[in-house]
Amino acid sequence: MSLDIEKGEFVSFIGPSGCGKTTFLRTIADLEQPTSGTLTINGMTPSEARQKRAYGYVFQAPALFPWRTIEKNVALPLEIMGYPDADKKARIARTMELVNLTGFERKYPWQLSGGMQQRASIARALSFDADLLLMDEPFGALDEIVRDHLNSELLKLWARTQKTIAFVTHSIPEAVYLSTKIIVMSPRPGRVTDVIMSTLPADRPLDIRESPEFLAIAHRVREGLRAGHSYEE
Amino acid sequence: MTVSRLRDSQVFAVLVLVIVLVAVWYLGSIGLNWAVVSDRLSRDDTAHSWWDILLTTWNYTRPILPAPHQVAVDLWNTTLTIDPSSKRSLLYHAWITLSSTLLGFVMGSVLGVILAVYIVLNRAASRTLMPWIIASQTVPILAVAPVVLVLTYNLLTGQNAIAQLLHLNSDAAQLISKATIATYLSFFPVVVGMVKGLRSPEVLQLDLMRTYNATTAQTLWQLRWPTAVPFLFASMKVAVAASLVGAIVAELPTGAVSGLGARLLIGSYNGQMIQIWSVLLLAAVLAGLLVLAVGVIERAVVSRMGARPT
Image 1 (tube, rainbow over the protein chains, first blue to last red):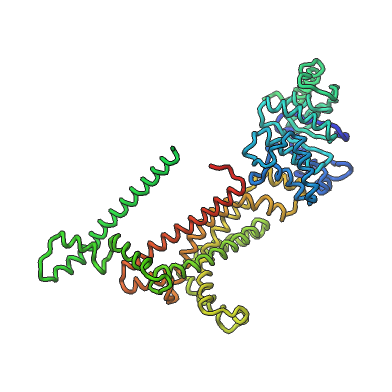
Image 2: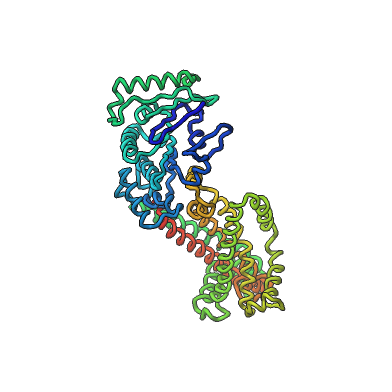
């Protein structure tokens, strides 16, 4: 089994819990070691890629530092990577604007809603401008209204930044709405049951989710999940 | 409105408790002093009613349990009416003890933090150091104190390179050797609290630092240390009280003539229970103030760190 992710793609990994989608993402990030097989990121091993700071990682929870203001949280990777002050300021302003949080720089995390906190954590992952963005169920803990909103925001952000995004989710509409490529996975043992290239246009308003094309792709994802016995138990 | 009512009810609760304690204390001093006092009065020629005996139990000069007002008067006379620089003033002795308490507390906290950082960063250190640290606290301090005091004092004043280098007078050497005992008692809660605190960041936060390829020092300073701050203050509150106990204990066995510990010892040699109780109360007040001071600093630091106001 071999899988390629092209530059600029938006790839979703979908499957039930226990299928290894999060583990796979963590392996790309060198947070976990593969038991077998090889994995290269622009020709580098995951460990080299991590040391080169080649990716930004967005976790399931915002994991903001409560003693830092939002702008200081966004500045954290820049401080650690030793960016000069002027550059730091510009980057903070730019990424805060990208995630629509301008005006909240001096707030502490507890003063923001869950959706805004997760947006701040996306800004933090974007601030040092890595080409690859790894997102592990970033909107899983949010309600559906906020999630819809953040999904369309994320598409706009992706269009503006031209990043390659690997996105883990267990929501079928989310995967279909966001992705150019959908990897359907199944558990015990974790494997890939289907790889779907999306035929949806690049410009996707929220109501594209009622179009026949969208529903056809969602149906195929569901078929893939069924083939992996994801609906049993 | 509700806040002030809550505070009022707290004040009320504390007041009731104090009144009950004082009442029990008065009753106790009747019971404990009765035999001595009635024996003493029976040797007079005049007859005494039980009321005379009762009043005398509260005002006897060498009571077994002095009455609260006797202790209060003694405290008043030895703190507020005497020049604080006089050796008869309890404030003078409290300052002697307080200075070694504070020095010991600072040294203990620093030592505790250094040990905790070392233990958290070094897996092997956790297994090799921790048993020794725990063992150090199982040794009865009263037994070790004289040994440590004599060793430290001689190291600081005797014929050796360290003493010649530092060139301390005997007061400073005494202060430092007493502070050593305070350090010995106060580093322990800080080590335990800070090991726990430095290990308390969430897994996600640690993973995040790893994705940035942060160095161990960066992770320590940017993540572990701020997370551990509440633990630091909790353990420093225990440590400052332990430090005071250490300083007082250090004044007992060396024949020290000043400090609260020395006053306690002199009081017990002379059977002066009133004096002992004054010193005990003053030590308790001092401990309370020290813990309060740590709490005030904690609140300032925590609010500067953007904590949600409660």
